[in-house]
Length: 512
Image 1 (cartoon, rainbow, N blue to C red):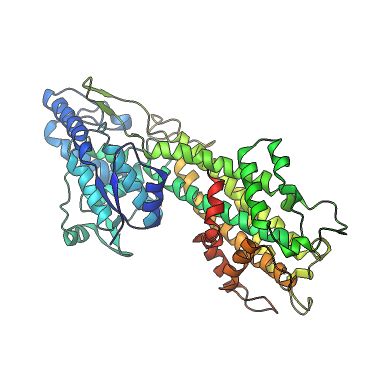
Image 2 (image 1 turned 180 degrees about the vertical axis):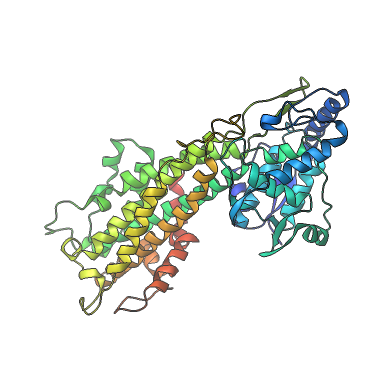
């Protein structure tokens, strides 16, 4: 049985969004929301009855807005809109992303400014609750005028057309709806436009990036601390006095967590005196400064994306208090593009500093560990090429981190002459997150290997938990063996949150 959530329009929380992202959820619309939806739908009906020209209700779209459409053809107008705009390409979006965008679209429509009938919102939620996931190609939107192409593919499913996934199996939408007892809808005036005009796809893709960035930051924090012990680094750089005089909140939080992770380490006590090293490399001692800055922009991005998740972003909008239909540009996803671009920087930097720590550990002249972290180096190559993989992925992320929001190409015969590129800004975060998860997985393997070379000395109680979580899946690298499965296992533990799972009490303080 799926967990349940009540959708109160305008009051989605990050917890709500994470829940739908993580697994299928049964969502019910708060009863009090229906009146606003009905009032806005009545306003659209009144406009049609009066015969007044209103954009998207009884006119064409975009550059064709001057074309007046007869009342008898308004349903056909909406149907044609969806068919002609279903032009996406590329791989299908993940189920998690589609669940998010369906929830946010329902939440937006349910605020009562879009002019759709209650049946539209109810049908959208019925598909979500039945586990019917529209097949939506991931490419084809420029992030204004909304995410037209991908949302059109979503809307096809409401109409009983196109393809959907149920339990991972692709099938015609009409069959899936029939099996679930859901009646396809015929779109009334404005409803097609309301469904496809909006930033929900860009926002869903960016939210996926946000949730992965949070996991990567947490994994990077605990793995980075393990690396300090593996390299016999100092805990002095994490002294709270250093960070207090700067005052950056993320930096202070990161230093506190790293300090707590290292507390009680026998390895640290073993080199408190007579250590000839004066300072550690930046990738060890500047972790609070780098990871703290990443934490701060992740938090800022989460604020923007939560606002957007609750926003009404279609066009035109219906204001029933004054009986006006106003045309604007809330569909322009510039806030989402900027947030996604900032997340790209954070994801890239978490991986970049991790790659530097891997390089440090395999260099015996710096780490004091066996060359390439393996016994009998020469006969064994150890972590030599695993680091090359990390370097390759870190380099890829540098290219991906170039801001998408600074690009724009005019569309719709220059009517839509400046766009956000938010959809790509959000889409590329998934690949970047996977790259960084792999880099962190390699560092975790390397740091655990380094700690093992210090036995019988132990690390701190918390870091021994981090070490054990990996060793439960991957044994010590005693001699060369097929290495790719080890890296994949470690990457998977980063992706699913296992890296920081036992430190939940401590890691939660990063975000408070």
